[in-house]
Length: 295
Image (cartoon, rainbow, N blue to C red; front, side, top):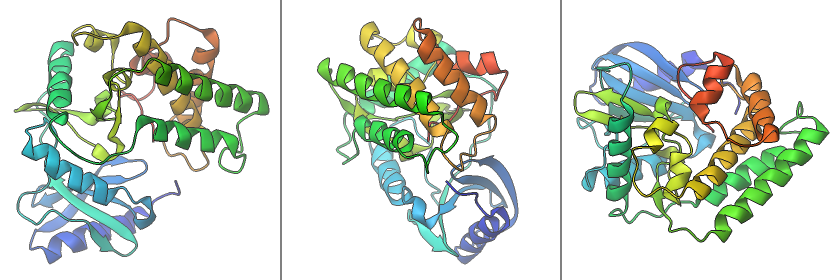
């Protein structure tokens, strides 16, 4: 993903807000990776801005509406304007409810309860969505193409390619029940609010076994989630490590400390079980407080 022109992106977001009679005299950058998240004030709206070619915004807006209808604990679109994707100066802009954080961390029990509720409500939402294997294919494409991952050593390229393919087969061969998932419910995509934990960043939603979602969270959270297939969870944890490794070596990756994440993920895969969770890898690196987005 190429670098976002932040001043232009901010101008696009504030222009969209102004056209909808939302006062946006200031913009505070909250997150910047493949998209830019901005808090617009004084209207207090969360704007998500991405290059138009990113293409995920329409899916995310439609999905957010469907999930809200069935009561999923997810972030809501901004209720003062129509739910839609705005195209401005080569960017897509979507507007969301801004939630003031009330606690720095969500307890493992509350986290697991909210994730279980999310999965239960998602089973009621009939939404066409990609399968988790599409995410594997995206990672495989990065690994297979030296142009997309020029700094990845040949031996690491072969290792990651083999591991991704093997884990795809192993997980599919288990024949687990699949359903709509968040796709990346790690702590960076969970907000502690006065209404409890809410899941955000819906662009990664896909169909797969619930253990695929659980592979993104801490072991303490998994311990409170009922009826987990531990063997499948281990396979999914390996898969998440392999996908994170692939994306951290991608040309133009913007995750802070991304190259070290790629190196540590590869090292963990080669070292073998027990497979570390993303929060464990983060502690090893003394990196960002939240686990990384895989995309």
